[in-house]
Amino acid sequence: MIFAALSLLCLVAGSHSAPLTCEELVRPLDRLNLHHLKGKWALVAGSLSHPPFLERFKQRDSASVNFYSNTSETHISYTRSISLHNECQYHTYNITLNGSSYTFDGTENDNFSANFAHTSCHDCMLMHMRMESGERQHFYLFSRRRQLEQKEMEEFRAQVECLNMPPPAVMDPTKALCPEETASDPAAQPEEKTEGQK
Ligand SMILES: *[C@@H]1O[C@H](CO)[C@@H](O)[C@H](O)[C@H]1NC(C)=O
Ligand SMILES: *[C@@H]1O[C@H](CO)[C@@H](O)[C@H](O)[C@H]1NC(C)=O
Ligand SMILES: *[C@@H]1O[C@H](CO)[C@@H](O)[C@H](O)[C@H]1NC(C)=O
Ligand SMILES: *[C@@H]1O[C@H](CO)[C@@H](O)[C@H](O)[C@H]1NC(C)=O
Image 1 (cartoon, helix red, strand yellow):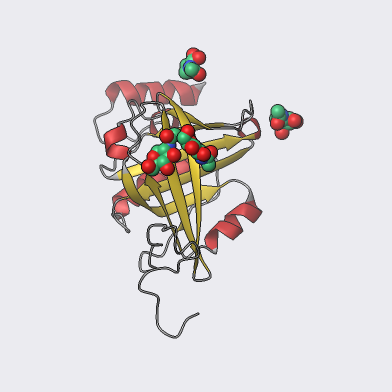
Image 2 (cartoon, protein in one colour; image 1 turned 45 degrees about the horizontal axis):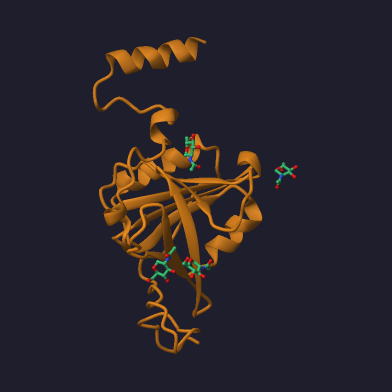
């Protein structure tokens, strides 16, 4: 009660530098810009609420998503690439958009919800997925850059904290991203593979 009153006070009296409340920090994107979404995004950091999944997530060398320029406003697709043990794994997803929320096609499940979330980083994209009625959450930060400013990472860490999720795993920006998937080379290897590694 006192806390609520205090944060209300902060909101009223606060300047732009006042710390944001969790509700403000972790909010869906006001308006999804499909044009902005198009193309390749590097995974910068992520948190997963289920510890074994987070451990597995940390083993990735790199990951990226590539949104296609589908003509539909509501039905779009993206390919996720993961570089793990020097091999690239690809998976394409069809999603249906409703504002900044989305669902994966063919998986009608009341327990799943997902949305693109707000971030103050201008060339970033945040994906927030909730399974089992919010018991299990995934929160992924992507950017056109491989590495973000400290301030941008602080915002992400604060968002993760608001969601009561474990501290995020930060990807190694020096590890190559997978090349675009080509039909002739489904098991492509990461570009600029470091010498001597197999
Ligand atoms: C979107 O475009 C990609 C690439 O052209 C295509 O593979 C995919 O099937 C399209 N998705 C939909 C829902 O039309
Ligand atoms: C995605 O949608 C396209 C177009 O409707 C379809 O051809 C394709 O098979 C779908 N892919 C998956 C993985 O569901
Ligand atoms: C889109 O989301 C709104 C608000 O959550 C909901 O009322 C509406 O039914 C949804 N539309 C579809 C097509 O699912
Ligand atoms: C939704 O999640 C609850 C709690 O984890 C589970 O008991 C239930 O079976 C799930 N329902 C579906 C449709 O998956």
